[in-house]
Length: 593
Image (cartoon, rainbow, N blue to C red; front, top):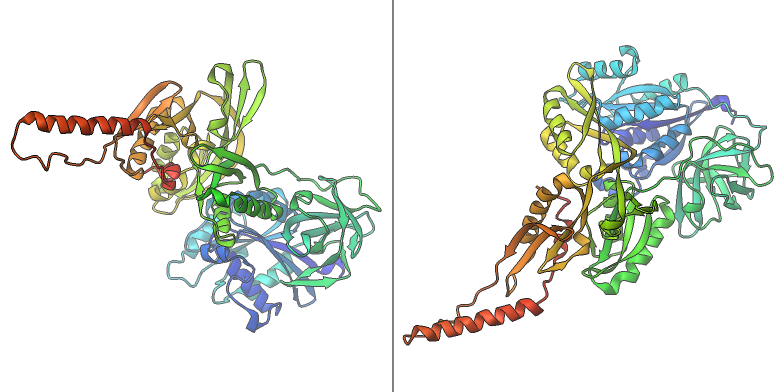
């Protein structure tokens, strides 16, 4: 099809603002999917996506409307996948900005708008859920006008659930989204905006052809990774794969390759033909690095190989997932896995438990730290247990993030206090509309990993939303906080923490451990320490048996003798006894309050 009749657009929105529902209505209206095959959230293929009500893996679909070919990319709405969103935007010329008319603009809405503006896309504002009694069209329209600088008449009012106003969205896409402007006679350049691994077919790429064309059986090359392969099949997604002979400039489609892992064809890479290599790759590619790490251990050590195999299979289709084997004296053999964020970690854990039937113990998530030794050697550590000897360390640097919280005006004070409590620095406070504040801040990532999001929702009665990006690494006064159970150090519980917060955190964690570790036949000390100095302690009292019940009358020395014998036995038990630490003890920091 000629480029003048092609429209490439994506849908951007905050979580749960109605992206997937609108995509369903568009598929129905254009007759892309037959009524009998239609179901809610059609483009969300994973059970997890349907249960959580969020898009985890982006999806692409080609629709025909009048004489036009419309290519839609349904993007994830969560901050963990913002790089995927940025690559999807680079594959389009226009974006539908969906805003929930009951909630208004949220943090991820802002973040995605900035990405769309940076990519120079035509933005079509759409107000969804206008059929609900709680919809406040006037207020939310004013917020959108303030954000985009558009006219109120430009905003489309729809209800994706009932289908009201959706026809107007298709008309607006045809009118306002510019056609692609690729060069069909130049060497082929295609942008990979998603890739996944199929057990039977190998790596399948979702691509936007920018220049030239790619035909079936072509020899292809990835410019960033240098991997070469064959285009075994090309075609479009409607939404199931629809085989074709060729993909031309301006089109969005899929390529089935003979590659064995998505690490060879990463999101953002440029595909070209081996026979006529292009001189310059498409801009914007970056190697996505995880910055949240957690240890995954099977509940039974017999299952270690199954866990390792399962993680390897998952990593074939998720190039951001990185892992190394790990060994803990308490938990046995496991793997230390790197994630893009806490949601990514949660999804991987659930997939391992469901798809591979594994029972897992997950240790407290941490971030990575850059350590400079006295001899100027640089060391990157993913876990507090890997920290070198303190005497040899010159400085420790931790990652800081640039964050943005969008919150109604009455809650601003509480949010600023929360940020300050996490060692954060408020940078800016601005207002999108009279009632909506945007707070820009910087904070150490480690302090936001565990319960920041929960506390934010609690303080703002559920109205606050949060978005962040990695800023840089900064040298801080960081120490390793160790925890001892019955005099034995448990490495899996060790954390890196700022010296000023070490004592408070130590007290909180030993109190939590006291709740989750069962009582023993002997007294157990739970301690927190920095180096050789103990800073917090709680004691688990021993089970007691009344050994004097059978003594009636007689001299008191008989009673003392029996009690002394019991005390001696308890002492011996304390020296040789082992404390069984339950799985919950390793996640005490995930929920501190």
